[in-house]
Length: 266
Ligand SMILES: NC(=O)c1ccc[n+]([C@@H]2O[C@H](COP(=O)([O-])OP(=O)(O)OC[C@H]3O[C@@H](n4cnc5c(N)ncnc54)[C@H](OP(=O)(O)O)[C@@H]3O)[C@@H](O)[C@H]2O)c1
Image (cartoon, rainbow, N blue to C red; front, top):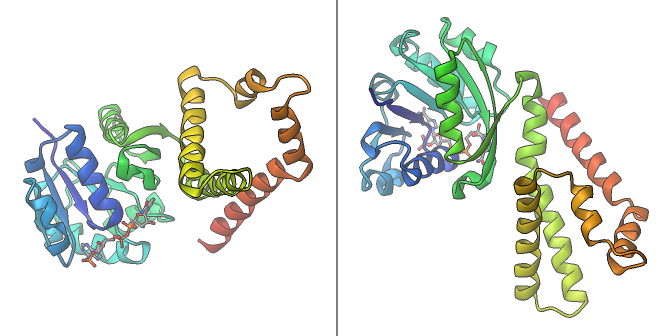
């Protein structure tokens, strides 16, 4: 039996998940239903054969896997609305909502459903996310299905729920940190002679290639650095100057400040 997926909250993330799953061929358009209160922005998905509705209960009754892609303040109301239609023998909940814990979901739905939390990043729009996933009450088959689902949208990794805030910082805020790194490269590139367009292309593709080297070779960054640092050369001179100026230290401090902020604010 093919699985059916409901995406409750077809905003930026929900719609990107629907599009990515369609594009990958993981699921037929007619096996996906997407909801939001104003469904008109979902017309482009409807034209591809995806069901769209503003009725969350209809969506729950249609699907086996239910992806919650709402803003944190909207989750409790929507879960309370659909709770009567949820069946622990059939439904699996996947929440991509930041900072909403699985025990909170349990409390609102008042039954023991298989629940997953997933933390993707904005590269999910181009199917290049890293998605950190945790789970409770889930079977091996359900874990495999959810991993495969997010692997269509990049890569995924299973973690413990206590690391979800850390995953938000490293994986989701990480996109912004990487953008700043690229922006600084562009600024430096302009100073040494490139126009902004050429500097941007060189900086972005260089970072993409560097990341791809690590993923392909499964190496530590320092091993790849050793390959490009000639003794007395320009690379090591530049790298050491960056470290004297606090490069690694400022990144680590930034990550820990983001983490403290997320933990203290939630
Ligand atoms: N964007 C990311 O890359 C990203 C990454 C990781 C996690 N997240 C998390 O994902 C969640 C969604 O983020 P987002 O950026 O996609 O937000 P968003 O664009 O605001 O999407 C939320 C959607 O929920 C819909 N909605 C609101 N109330 C509803 C209801 N009662 N029934 C059905 N749909 C309803 C809204 O549409 P209507 O107003 O038309 O109903 C809206 O389209 C957030 O919790 C965020 O923290 C996002």
